[in-house]
Every structure is written in structure tokens, then in C-alpha cells.
Amino acid sequence: TTLFRSGVPLLLYTLLFTHGDTSLSLKCQPFPDLLCSQELVVSTKVWNASRPPLRYVSGATHRYLGRQYRLKIVRGARPEVALHGGCLHVVSSAPGESGVRKAMDEWYRRQARLQFERRVAVWDSWCCRQQLPQPKMRLRSMSKRWGSAARNGVIYLNPELVRAPSACIEYVIIHEICHLKHPHHGKAFYSELRSLCPDWAARKERLESMEL
Image (cartoon, rainbow, N blue to C red; front, side, top):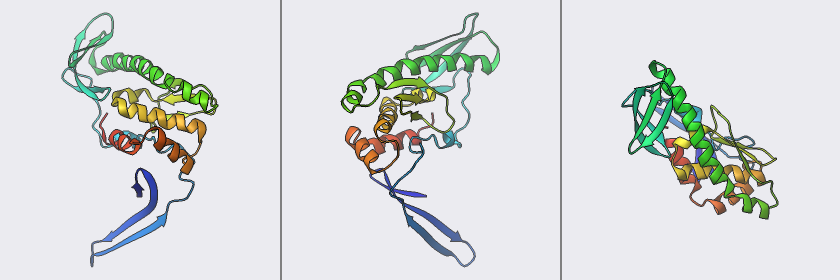
């Protein structure tokens, strides 16, 4: 397990417990200076493994930008998804949940592209001042990450992230923007992240605690 302070990893520890004569021990070691060489901070933690699978039936709830909306499903020749009030209205041409899921997946990808491109573009001038490549957003489905960054300025974002609140989406984008300047999760990276997003740790914790 990792101990954090202000969102920065400090200590790796293991808690050992035996039931027989009731013994308890704690094994600790400092976290290395180079915190991480892989994209692990913006991780889905195996996509909330304890979360029950999403249902694609009328009355089921799905999130969009952090808010929960109930599904209202009708049969029709042309698949369509529209947001009205507190409901997601879904027209599905195929019986069962598979047709509804396909229509909703396509709708989520369209919304993700619109939301993410606008938010990434905000960082064009900052990247220019830092003599970094102009950031370009690409959608990429990933099973264990919310996002990743390439040296050429491409920011890959998981379309499922559009289910999260705006503050969490912006945190992931800022995290990846920082990687254009600092490829690894070292001290310079976290210093940059704190300067651009002072409450990043709270946003990260909120994102990881949500059932999306």
C-alpha cells in the first residue's frame, strides 16, 4: 500500500496480521525519488472491479459529466440518444440491451470528442509559451487508464472519462499536459501539476472513488 501526503507518494508499507496469538507488524520502505516511470497515477484501478456491471434497460442510471441520468428506451428504426431533463432518451432498433449499449457507446464517444477537444485546446497558449508541441486530443479506449500523453503532443483520453465530473476531466487533461514537459512522475512533474492544479489530489481521489 502507498502512503500519500498532499497527493504525493511518500512511503510503501505492508500491514501483516495473524489471528493465532494476535500478532501485528508493519513493514515500510521509502518511496523512490523517481516516483514512477509509467502512467499509473491516472489509472482506473482496473475500472472499479467491485462495481456492478452497467445495465442498459429503462430505469437504469448512467452518468454524464458527473450527473446521473435515467434511461428511457423505446424501439425505433433509427438509433438515437438525446438528453432531456433528467433522462437519457434512447431509441434502439435492436432488441435487448446490446442495441441500447451500442447506441449509447456511440453517443458517449461523440460527447467525449466535443468535451475533450474544447478543454484540451485551452492549453494551446501555455504549451506554446513552454515551447512544447501543440496538444492534440485523440480518443482511445483503455482498460486501466484515463489518459496518456505522447512526446509529439498527442493527448489520448478514454471516452469513458466523459461520465466523470468536469473537475475530474480537467484534472486528467492537466496531468497529461504536464507529461508533455515532464515525461516521468518525478518531483518536477508534481511541482508543475500543483502549480497548474493546486487541488489535483482531491480531484484524483474524487475520480477514483466514483462509480462511473
